[in-house]
Image (cartoon, rainbow, N blue to C red; front, top):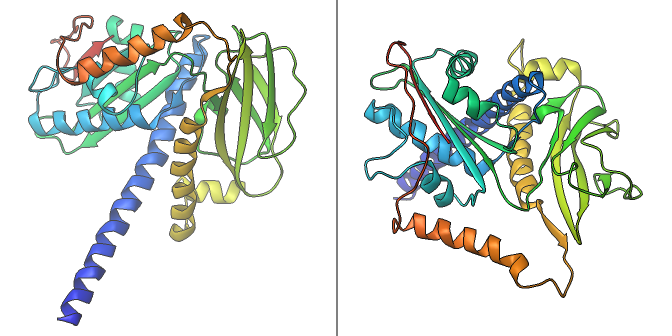
Length: 329
């Protein structure tokens, strides 16, 4: 009996280890996809987007559902659309868009297909989005691949993005994009747990020099907007050029070390999401200043229970293309 129980525990640990490895690989790939989206947006003079775990969860779940059903649609079997999925994942958005595609052999091809379609291009190149979720799966019933993309923005959340949301860097000098800098009247930042810089004029792009040692480094920015102070942070891994090539899959690599680093990347994404908050709010703020946010959250709760029909722009499809495309906003 003990031997059987031990074998069962070993099997469970192996299964859990495999699941964690797959999750880590998925996160590394998601970062790569985010960088490609941000490079595209940068070429059109648009701000980069920050990878968001809640949007990724919603996009990934929908991609897997579509892969099983073989029907590429924005609505599930109950008629619930992207707003429901985002809210169910805990993302209470101010703006939200969704792009879907199936049959493209790579993320680059899916991006190009979206660019070639007016509705999807409008989603990709909307300047007001701040965050991104990606979902992808292979071995679909009807199509070889399914790609899902959620783009969103939340009220009172101004994320920062290091190096276009890359997973790692091989040089200490990094570029940080600061959402909300255009509307702020003052800004300061710090690296890791170091001293805060002096309050100064806001800048959308911030050049930072990380401490020159291997590991994760955090940049935190505070913005003064009106009477409130908003804070957001992001992390990036500083590593040698040689090991970065190994992480990317070139040459022999240390899988145990890579797994440890990627696990840290997952933690960093989640910690960055938790770090987006208001750190100062005046005590005598009028009640109506909170009303909009409260009503917005209530509206999403109502949507989540299916008590009202979501109203999103109609889907536009191009049946002449062999690969299926869907865009919604």
